[in-house]
Length: 442
Image (cartoon, rainbow, N blue to C red; front, side, top):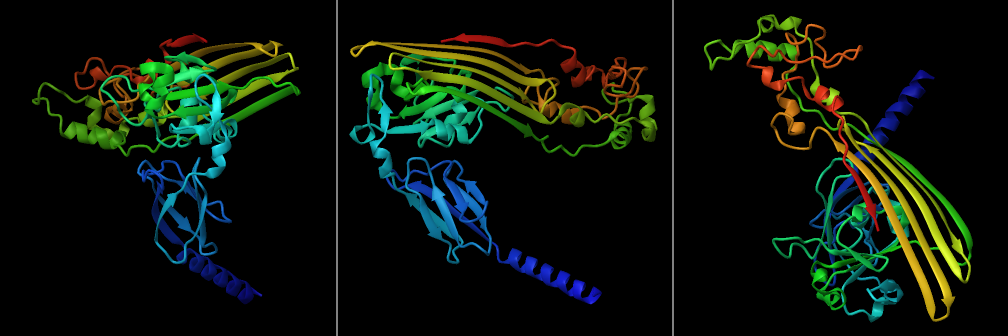
């Protein structure tokens, strides 16, 4: 019986290693058959498996194809999907053609709407279903990877950080932001205060023909946003909720207290620039550890909840929604909260007379107590790698960053070599009352 089990295990392992060895890594590039430009965010999936990836900013991709599957599927918004046989190839370059099925879609173009096939300008459209596929914090993130020719860059990794949108690249040394039009009303800012759950469609006008409608404000392109409105087919009530967890980043490998104490004492003689080592550094084995990276980094949590009621009759239709977003970042003290309220009301008095009203309100509060970059004291995350990994000789009450009684450790203020570090970032973050409140009405 034991021999049979042993033979079965060996056979299973051989099959596993054989299957692993037969896996093949495929690289390639996806471009547009019309312009020849690389397609950013195109999806490459292995047919019949959960394996998949997306193209980078240059349109390149890398994917591992198991031995059991020999077919990949390449798709991008607004383009025809292609199914390609691997057939032993290690490199696959693909050109995607525009989708003819998109030509009959109705696109908002400023003063009205028209069929896509009748347009002479370059337009990209994003529907509510596409936005709902990936939970996003801001409306600008909903454009990322979904509109060809539109480059979306996160300016800051902090919760609620800014997002930069560029259409057709950098056009001047000044402001390159596109013009945003929300329910027919042009706005110059506040786009990230809108709730992505309220969006019905996004149409991007990418060429110079948009200036015929909006003037020179449209020189950097136009993003036309239409929010969801009530329909005359009864009442619709929706509840959307999603939570997401963000893991801690990879830690830098730095010296521990004992290693640092021995090194600092050995290379800090009293005659060098007046810097003197602390007496207890001479006995490095007695030093207490202060792990600043572990104290500052935390697991992030993102919670997003939306409730909406939409409906109406032939005469009156309305839409009302409430949204709440709470995003706790991976850095201690970083947090972003946003409350959204939206109302749309349409009244059709006669066949030739219609009144439409839209009201949007957003209240946000973002906190980034520690900063996001730089190496100087208090400047950002790089500062952590320069802090001494011990607080011995500072506070006589505790040598910990923060003990169970709420006491904070700090560096010895009487010693020039460490006093400039002060009380450390944890104390600075937890003892300051920081608010960055914004109220936005549209």
